[in-house]
Length: 189
Image (tube, rainbow, N blue to C red; front, side):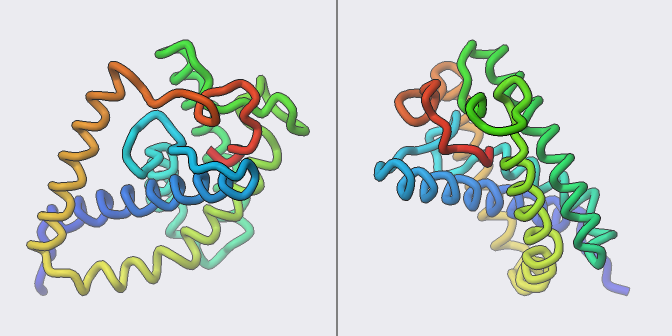
């Protein structure tokens, strides 16, 4: 039996992280375009990715793929896991920089303005779409890409991400629509 190198599994998760991080960034940018009629680069980083979405996507992939045939369970667990991740991330970001990147205080059933019911429901729907629909497609497509290309793309993405992270550790992306307290449209981070 031809066994895949361990680097192949690493590349699988790195690429998944960046795909989901980019999808999250795109979601929030489009949401802001529709609701506020302005292009705003959402999140702490300058690049077109929101790592909280990538981390959440990896978490769901690792924990829920075994139950992808039970979409209601995937929905409920996605809702729970992503809401916890969002709460902890909000807490960490505010502790680290003294800034809130989102505030759901005006939303129904919010917890300290860090998470809300609507966000949890959207996370549940997104997690179900990711685990039950996107991941099977991604797995098939991923295995068609030569290992060398996977490694090259992962290396480039990681280098850019690390450089962006180092810069943003000193001066995170802030401003109107990114960290303003009146920002209620970003209810999915």
